[in-house]
Image (cartoon, rainbow, N blue to C red; front, side, top):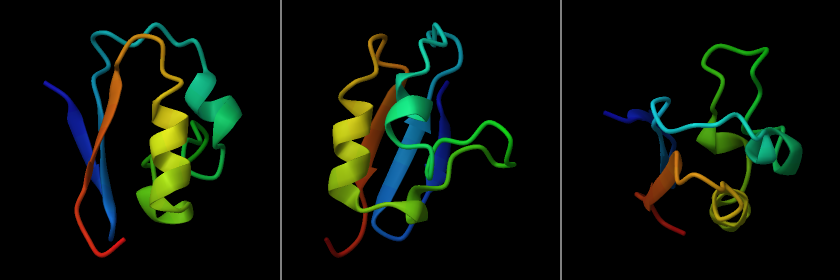
Length: 71
């Protein structure tokens, strides 16, 4: 089951069971995906479009999203 990280405009879902740790999320959008921070995903640190674009680069589908607020 994926872990949900809810932001004001976007909820990001992360499924650690299928993640292969390619690192595309961290490389593409380190303001949102930062493994040195807890929680390591903060959807309020970038625009919804930036998040959508970064998640599209996830090769495994471990990251998904749902738009939740006013965009």
